[in-house]
Length: 276
Length: 296
Ligand SMILES: [Fe+2]
Image (cartoon, rainbow over all chains, first blue to last red; front, side, top):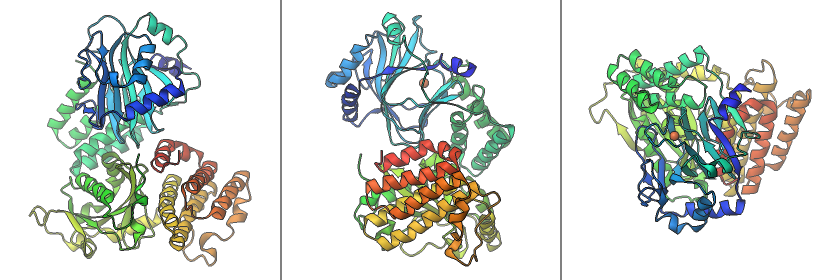
C-alpha cells in the first residue's frame, strides 16, 4: 500500500529488546532524580522533560542538540544496565537522553535536524520504557504507538509530532546517532510488519469548519490558548497537508480581526516547519 | 505510582481534589465571560472522596457558548482522561462530569454552569471562592432576563446521547461504585450500580435498536428494563451483549481491584459488541483509565 511504503521511510520497528534488560533499564530510569530539566520552547505544550545520557559536554543537564562525538554523561555512569544496553548497539551517538512526557503533553507538528551541518545521515531511535496506548507518534498522516518491548526508528526531518494524550507519564530513551555500518546492521530487519498503524482520515470541509468555529468561539471568549491547542491537536486526528493546523490558527485570529496574533502564528509556522 | 484517591481516608482534606480545582479554575477563569468560580465543598458523607464540584457563574447570554466549549476546554487545558458527559440525574442544573488525573489519582470533576446573577449562582455555605469578578469590580451587573438556563436544560433533555458519551458515563460511574463498594457502603454502591447499568443499557439501545429514542419517563414497569431481555435476544449481537450484561449484573458492584478489572472488561466487551468503533476510538483513553486504576 502506497501510504505504508511512504510511512516506512519515516518510522519503523527495529527489533525486540530483551525483557529482562528492559526491566532493569526501566527501573534505573524511574529512579533518576526527579528534577529532570524542562525544555521550554515553541515546540511543545509543556510537560516535556529530559536528562542527557550522551552529549558533547558529559553534563546530564545540557540538552542542546548539536553535531558531536558524544560522550557518556555523569548520569549514565550511575545507570549500569542502561550504559550496557546503549553501548551494545555500537552506534556513534550525537545525543541520547531520558525523556519524560507528562499526560496531556504534546510536541506540536514540527521538523528536526535542519539546523545540523554535519553531512553524515542523522537518525533517531526510541526505547519506550513506560508508555500507554494514548501515546502516539504522528508522521506521514499516520498515528503509530511505539509499543514497549521494542527499539524504534524515526526520521524526524518530516513533519511529525508526539503526544501523551491522557497519561500516565510516558518515559522513553531517545537517541540521535549517525548513519554508519553499525546502524545499517542494527536496522537491517526494520519494518512495519505487524505494527498497528492508524492511517488518519482526511477531514471533511464541514469538519474543519466546525473545528474552526469552535476555536473562534473559544478565542472570542478569551480562551486563546485553548483555541490554539484545540487546533494544534487536530494534527493527531486528521491527515492534512503540512502546516494546516498553523494555517487554521491564523484563520481563527483573522476572523476575530486580531492581526497581531495572526502574524505571530504565521511566523511560528515557518519556524516549526523550517520554512525560512 | 501511588494509590488512587478513592483509597485516601475520609476527612483528609481532599488535597488532590483541591489541587485539581485550582488547576481547573485557572483554565476556566481566563475568560471575562466567567464572572465567578466557587469550589463547593463535598457533603459530609465520604462518598465524595475523589470528587470535586466547581460552580461556574457565566454571563447569562454566554451560558450556551460556555457549555459548547466546556468539554474542549477541559480536555485541552486540564487534560481529562475521558470526554465529559452531562449528568442528567442532577435536577435543574447543567452539570457535566470529567475524569481528571491529578498527581496520579483520578478526580471526578463536576462542573455546574449557571447564569451569573441568578439564585443558582449563589455559592452554597462553606464554598471557597476561587474567582469573583464583581468583588474585583470587573464584572458588569447581571440582568435576570439573560437567564438562558431553562431553555438550555430543555434542549439537554431533548438531545439524543451518543454511545461514546454513554460509555464514558458507564466507566465514570464504575469508578464511583467501586469506591462505595470497597468502603462497605453496599447500598450506595447498589444505587450507583443501577445508574451504571442504565447507562450501558442506553448505549445498547442507541447502538442496536434503530430509532429507539429515549426511554419514556412514565414507563410503568422496571424503569426502562421491561422486555429488554427479549429485545436483546432477537439477534446474535444482541445475545452476546445480553450474556455480558447478565454477567455484569450477576457480579454486582466490584469491591476489590480484581472485581473492578472484571467489571471494566465486561463493560468494554458489551460496548464492543454493540459499538465497536466507539470502543476502538476510545482505546487510548480507556487504557489510561485502566493504568490510573492499576488494572493493567
Ligand atoms: Fe521532533
